[in-house]
Amino acid sequence: MTKNEIIKIFQEKFGNETPEVYASPGRINLIGEHTDYNGSFVFPGAIDKGMIAAIRLNGTDKVRAYAVDLKESAEFGLNETDAPKQNWARYIFGVCRETIKRGGKVGGFDTAFSGDVPLGAGMSSSAALESTYAFALNELYHNNIDKFELARIGQSTEHNYVGVKCGIMDQFASVFGKAGSLIRLDTKTMEFAYFPFNPKGYKLVLLDSVVKHELASSAYNKRRESCEAAARAISKHHSEVKFLRDASMDMLNEAKSEISAEDYKRAEYVIEETQRVIDVSNALEKGDYETVGKKMYETHHGMSKLYEVSCDELDFLNDLAKKYGVTGSRVMGGGFGGCTINLVKDGLYDQFIEGAKKEFKAKFGHEPKVYDVVISDGSRKL
Ligand code: GLA
Image (cartoon, rainbow, N blue to C red; front, side, top):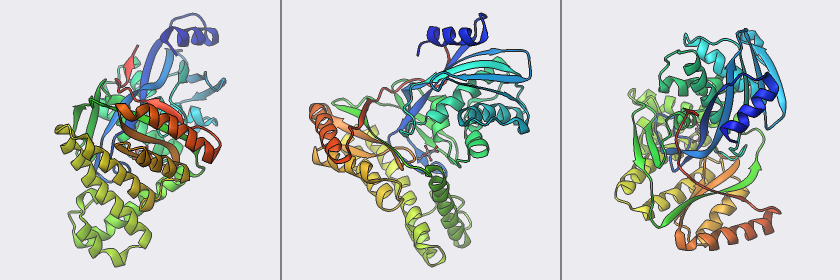
């Protein structure tokens, strides 16, 4: 949706004065999955799909919000007890509350928003929504909260108002995104570097299985608990280990008898994935996309067999990628449905997409959706 379109809808709902318009993107992640709550590395980039919101302060202590795509309205106050019932409105409410908790000023406003990040596809439509409002409120109220903290406002919204104990990757990528660059972020130190990403001769494409499994958020929280349990057990032997990022396989093996077999598998995946992100950044610096692709396949294997966040549809898409000779492929994001991310040689692209659509449909009754990745800018005023 364009700026003018959202302004028009806003004015139909809330009257003629002109609102400000803000936007924030969803994200992809090249590699480094389920590492961000383990103090480890991630490699995301913002995409050309996101949320757009028109906002105007209304001088009251109430927020009046309109979700264009759902054609639903909500009205709520800004005290902790005012949480709205609609799920989508809780994100906006959470961002307001988390801003206030950080000493920021927030008053009543009218807003209409719309998005084109496919829901449940693992491209983080929720972070796009949170970042849009965190960024906008910060500007509109001159709160001077820095960009890291804006990302944390979104993350805390997930923790405290949505119930997902997520890491910082999605909100970070949405706020800090830069056109043409992926970002390697160290989630322990929050140091980051932009990596211009223009793999000559390859395309990055997402295949969306269009399945979303129920209970994904409780399964996600359970993965996090496993990692924390493993890190705690290791830290009894090695007090310097705070996160799995700090642990080696030898350390994990030392603590093996003190943790469940399930927690062991989860931790094994995270320790290996941490190394893979380092390997991929080295390979990217040399333009060695074959190694990047190989690591992506290894990640898929780990996510499927050790971390167990894949599903039949995603495993099938991954097998298809292998069969067609695709350079790299893996489930992207939290898992439990959503997309695979594929690094495909230009010459193979048409054949792979056509074949994947046909074979996936023959097995699951519907085609996967195809999204070409365009790496784009982060939160901004339009
Ligand atoms: C979700 C979370 C992120 C991250 C990924 C998995 O997208 O919001 O913090 O943990 O899953 O890498």
